[in-house]
Image 1 (tube, rainbow, N blue to C red):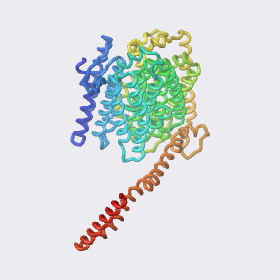
Image 2 (tube, rainbow, N blue to C red):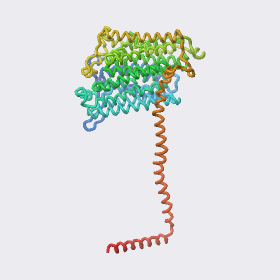
Image 3 (cartoon, rainbow, N blue to C red):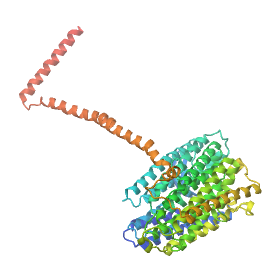
Image 4 (cartoon, rainbow, N blue to C red):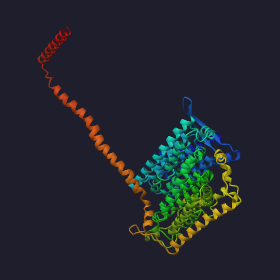
Amino acid sequence: MDKYIWLIPLLPLAGFIINGIGRNSLSKNTIGFIASLLVFASFALSVGAFLQIKSTGLPINVTVFDWFAVDNFKVPFSFLVDQLSSIMLLIITGVGFLIHLYSIGYMHDDNGFGKFFAYLNLFVFFMLLLVMGSNYLIMFIGWEGVGLCSYLLIGFWYTNPSYADAAKKAFVMNRIGDLGFLIGIFLIFTYFGSITYADVFSKAAGMHSKDAPFVLITLMLFVGAVGKSAQLPLFTWLPDAMAGPTPVSALIHAATMVTAGIYMIARSNILFTMAPDTMEVIAIVGLVTATFAALIALTQTDIKKVLAYSTVSQLGYMFLGLGVGAYTGAFFHVLTHAFFKALLFLGAGSVIHAVSGEQDMRNMGGLKGKLPITFITMLVGTIAISGIPPFAGFFSKDEILAHAFMHSTTFYVVGVITAMFTSFYMFRMLYLTFYGKFRGTTEQEHHLHESPSNMTIPLIILAILSAVGGFIGVPESLGGHHELEHFLAPVFERSTKIMGEQTLPKNTEWVLMAVSVLGAIAALGYAYSKYVKKADIPVAETEERPALVSLSYHKFYIDELYDTLIRKPLDALSVFLYKVVDLLGIDDFINGLGKGTIEASKGLRLLQTGNVGSYIFMMIIGIIAILVYSFISIHNIK
């Protein structure tokens, strides 16, 4: 298997090249087939790598070529596939294949069909590079690559100015985080003399937390994760990124790209374990982000915006898990989140497809009978994300909450309240979309239909995974063996030795589970009472809302705050630098030199008469002047 590992990222890259070149000549069926087949081939190879690692317990290291060397600093272009990256490969290629398959139906009528699939393949290539690299430099190439692809895919319908602005916003905000990540890599090289994982982690494990600036290094890496994984304060790009086609939302903003920050921290776990102060910062930022985004999601009326803020909130949960030392729990939530959030985004796309592009839930309703497959699968995804057993989200979310309880009771209480918010806004979305009477136009109602099979089959597969995916992490308190924890143990072994085993009494764990589940059920019950029994439809844009509801609906005016505090002052500074420093200062100085030279040359030009006699006369005058000067100089010397 080792000698075929390099094919895993190469196949999607080949799809990008083929579809990129043939986007205007190949048929849509051919383009969709090639793009999907090559990602599926990568998935098959990823399954083979996973099975080999599971059977042997040994990671796969493959050096493709020696990249460059400067003195003793050598960087090979090499891949590392271990327990952590093998699961990420399955998520990226498996969920990625389903999204490719779904996109064939969803994008069939789009004129940029070939270009879209080329971009999707390129994104998968860079994401695979990010998780397969054996050093931070290759990870950074993949990191920047997925940022580029997100820009291309978010702004895919670039003729719409707001969509193009959303793409630029995502690109710029990610650059802020990327700078922090890059500084972190430089610091790692400075203090460890290497950027290869094996060298860095082995040296770090043998050091004392005061032997190197672990806090500074990990804070810089965390800044990178904040940008890529949309945490406060760099989260506002993710909801705007819903401007891209719905499959883009599912691929980039649910299953892969936004989890890159969590993967990077999990990969660098020993560095963060050696910096407990950074861990505390991560936990607090994650918890605040989870709660803040959930509060915004409570009142949104755009079906994709609800899911977008839900993604930000769930990412906050993952960072909370990382911050309290629940590395396995955080990564477990990455896995389950990939299933149910990709399902929910694709389900939302199916709804939007059925109602002729409508995304406002106030204009939906009564779709349960018209879209039975979409409804059932989205119901499964909603139950899973709400943390109701035995669906996938229950196991991963409760593992994070259990570790939060061991770390801080406050963290646990806030986490449970946020989980209740999650259940409320997700079932609110479900009820507004599928229950009651249809509130759209008559024309939309006539065109209501279930999506084609190439869109519903991925929904069914993801629904099954959302229902049973959590069983790979059943805790011992419920009679399981937490297979995922045992599988990932070698990756987190060094951190586990430092932090020690963290366990709760079974009775305590049962009580914590019961509290979170009852809270989720109470929240969905309240949502049912409000939006089904009372048929309380959110008010129109022009109508007034209570103060707190209005604050949430307008996203706490964070974008406006950034606009006032950051964008406008920077714009004013730019205008000042342009008009005063550039035009009046630099330009006037340079132009003044030019004008001075021109004016001086005009005077000197008058001496050029073209008369030979004048020139001889001037020469004689010059000779006389020299002789006089020489006579005076000799006289003064004497």
